[in-house]
Length: 388
Ligand SMILES: *Cc1c(COP(=O)(O)O)cnc(C)c1O
Image (tube, rainbow, N blue to C red; front, side, top):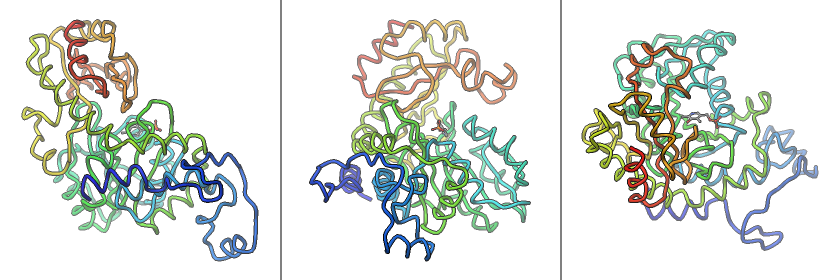
């Protein structure tokens, strides 16, 4: 898909004028249920209920607008909106596995996903093997006849490991399994895993897709038959998105292309600034030559994202002082909003680990995570300079 086609789809796909009223913007369909008539009864009888407005847990026109937009952006046949990223991820993993089946997944997944895999999934009769996200041969070696699903993230948190999507898709195919990719950190503006061989892409839409730190939502996109299976799970697990959240998400996604362009440009600028700063011992950013997978980032992404992880020579004390001193960069968890956020993994996402466990992952004392926003990059560097 060309950049111009992507930009036009961001603005228009699923967001056409609302024919009954002439409203230029889709209204919020704040209704729990809808009128039943002959075509709806027929659709229910034929098992096509997903395509009709019946009851908002099953689907709602405000959700459908977002689903149509995301499908257009991912190059997918179908998409499904959820109440949160975790609702999308848990429904997807359950829908793509069966009792006795195995999952091979990255050992650096989002904490909630890891806990779902380790603590909850075994109670459903599925087992899990974790492998490093950047080691395709380890993933292949972990696959057995029972392996049904490979689950990886385009970029990991906080160390920004990159998974090789085409290579993992080939491993999945060789073992009769499927590949699902969490593309929260990259978004379809930077990488479209379905085009690269993945079977399903999932998102926490709470991050870049929405982009304004004011919505919790999730989404999945892929072939219609597979997304229908996810929908069957959504109906029973109940993780259906609220129409107002869907409306806000639709509005956020209409500017995804311009936001991501600025996020990436700013992140490159800030990463280069940090790399030469005397107080900084190392910087992880896939757009830097120093990133061990810089070449892979260039090969499979249209931009290196906007998350930067760096380590201060002064350790955690220096990191905490930096987080307290920045004026523009807000000290908060989460990521992907237009405002720059700063936090440390040791007392947030990775607080449940010991120092040794964190260091084994590569999270050294003094490691700071930056979600670079779309403010002026010069102002962000000046903010970091004075805080450092
Ligand atoms: C935040 C996040 C999730 C969870 O999404 P929620 O919307 O908070 O449920 C999953 N994966 C990644 C990579 C995330 O960053």
